[in-house]
Length: 263
Image 1 (cartoon, rainbow, N blue to C red):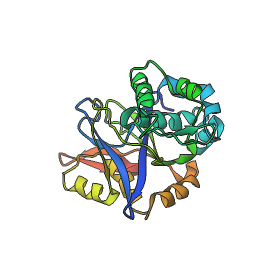
Image 2: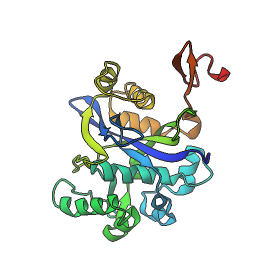
Image 3: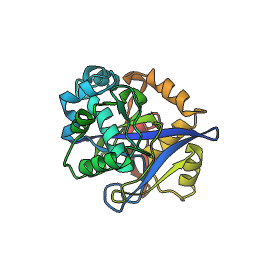
Image 4: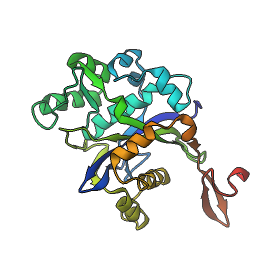
């Protein structure tokens, strides 16, 4: 990875409601770099996401397989781990099960206990490995599939190497945004979200809109997840938008756009 780029991971949590796909979107606080934007749960890779011991707490995905899927030499698993951690921290959805296969009951019996784990995680007083070890959990990496790979344009001061994933909402879980980094959360049909973005009703950046538009190609969440699970890193090339000024106005280009290679 480029040393000037901060590796980050983002997850589109999907569900099907009244025969319509819905995606969980969150509104960031006024804190930079994504102030007041509608995005998906996510953030930069933390050092605890890179712990080798976490390999034994996933449902079959090891670092080599994860790295191959992303076209990396190593540390690919950390992107799956970060997606799971950020999702739990920011909106309270924990993509994990008991090692026995038993589902978590975060909307009922285990709500308060995992709420405390979440608080400790946000305060950096624990990590996912410790929680998994104590509760004998398996992280649901098989419920995640890489969706896209975006690199922040060179004109930005803070640049990220971000992997976008999709995941299906597990049973027995409820959304509770943290109220600090995230000030609002909502389930919304991707087509409706795109329309609201273009109408100026929801402020979004290009990668968010493009990922939502990808969701529009599918009738339901499971169909989309099954499709992307079959993809390799060759099916998901990195996207580096380029921006330049033309006649005093900023113009943005994507890799497939005419003139992209000229800038």
